[in-house]
Image (cartoon, rainbow, N blue to C red):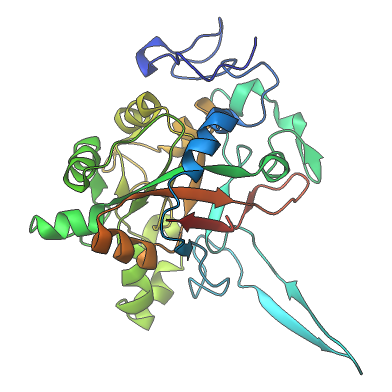
Length: 322
């Protein structure tokens, strides 16, 4: 089946490939596709995104690699080892977990418990150092297109309903739609949708050392964070927007922990069924402040993940350019 980037099916019309799981986009972009929704970033859409650069302001979206501190989800903290020679200096990273700080989840990060990996890839094809669905597929292509910020934190604060960052509050599709309307921004096909919850700002600047230590414990027990959801309702909403990828400034993009309280585990639908890359723990404060100041929430977006053969994730190395 040829790659399709126009006249995309609605979520209600999925699957398009006979025998594919319900609610999946398997086969839509080809039977051996490795990129999922990133296929929507056509040259024409990249050119259109480049026209959004108007004032030359550049906003890096990566955290320092030593944040959060301590790391979440049992991941380790990177150590920067400094090497001193007679006429040179060098350094290297030890214990570097590519998903411990700002990150992309590759399409091999999560498999559906019943249906497996994206596009029917088997566990035997997801191998260390290579195989299918690794982050190197994205790295070799690069990500460039129109980015849109939805500043949900400011939106809810202005409405007198600020998020409680110690809870798994669910940000619904209605909240996202209302936020876009208030910001006077339209989400278009192939956008990289970026959602600011404000959780990371709270974690870095307001959470106590005791709170940060507790959150770094058993994630399902001790970590609580607002995020998008619930499950299938949000998956349908994001798919019907036909975005290329979605990212946020919170630990898991979706409300954490997943379960009945938050409507299920959205990762199972976005990554293995829809082929949608997820970004987490992105630093959005400077970008959000500028968008609030000039009222412009769209921008040229670029990202160059690390070219790690068989990689499960990577820092996004992302820029928003206005």
